[in-house]
Length: 418
Ligand SMILES: Cc1ncc(COP(=O)(O)O)c(C=O)c1O
Image (tube, rainbow, N blue to C red; front, side, top):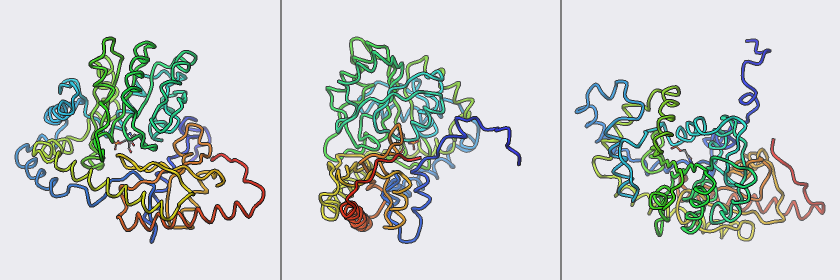
């Protein structure tokens, strides 16, 4: 077909696809160990729980599960989600919630309704790439706010708000992807103060908050904001992907009324509503009160897997990688020793093919895509044996890089990925 006139808008035609998705295409190769994707452990997907709930859906709800439904979502799932958020300490009614097609859709719809093309959005130094992609496709200019081991560095935010004047800020305060950072309470409170003072709408993305290992993280921004004297504008989203199953593609958005109305209109244009059958399946699952015990199972299992990977990395990549043992979520965020070369993303793909272990380089999460001395290693999906073997392969590969660098007297120049 002739596409000489360039049917695709440059914004899309020139965008690079997700490096993580590209790596996942390699993950199925024989003998490959993938520490790349943020996929839940297949052994922890609740097949039995789903099977029992399916019978209930087909038996009781009959035709409705196969019919068009409200854009805001099926009433049962909105009710069950409001109950869940209330149980977690938020004030939320079913009427204030929208069920979205994964929290990814909530990010995308908020980007469309909140950001004027060319306008800035404040984001952390390292981010979930598909959120950045959604903001870029909405025409947003990404404004970097420095990030450290405690998440967004709120002390450095005010000058940015003064000079760049963003109206919207995206933040993942709990076990962030990729850094695993948890924002402490004091930073959360300061962020809310600044948001109120500078009239910035916060997009709080919280898919990992329930996956804590030792102690629960501080309350979500939206909850703290509900108690504040001068409240800021906060939209909050969470997801059933990491705590039930990603295949359901269901998330929840809590937003102030004007934003909720706009998101409903945008969702009508995007997909009319999220799948009724999936929503009713999930509400039947939640109705059986199995989520709380399931979360206990997930927390224990992921805590053990996180410790397995951390221990194996200390054994096999000692001195080559520096990291904190995760306190929740799905990721180890490891800093490469300073004498190791800064490689572009494609070189890490080649490294993966050579050493049969896939990792995601920091460049994939950075705004500029420039090479970074960081790797994101996911412990969620592989078996404990694969985590150990993956760490061993990674250690051996990094050792190879280190010895090549030291035998090469010239240091490798910094390069950026395409
Ligand atoms: C920070 C963050 N937000 C949102 C999502 C999207 O999740 P989903 O659309 O499956 O709910 C992910 C997925 O990995 C994520 O890491």
